[in-house]
Length: 54
Image (cartoon, rainbow, N blue to C red; front, side, top):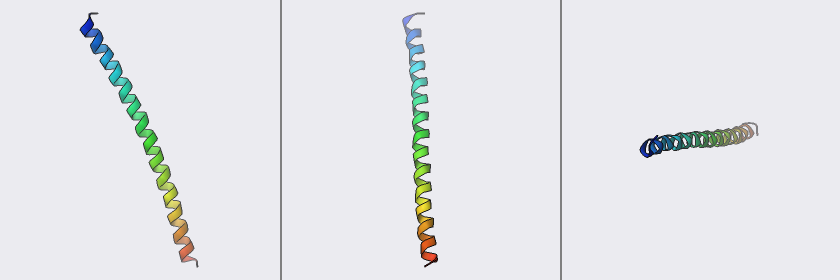
């Protein structure tokens, strides 16, 4: 293998690693967003329920 082919292969590996890192990060952010939405939903339901039963 000559140098340009090695560089191309290295760049492909770097791109694959970066894509995997971004996918993991996106899942992590999505998990936080879902969790936060559930917590906010529970709080809203509790407030509405308390308001309706007073």
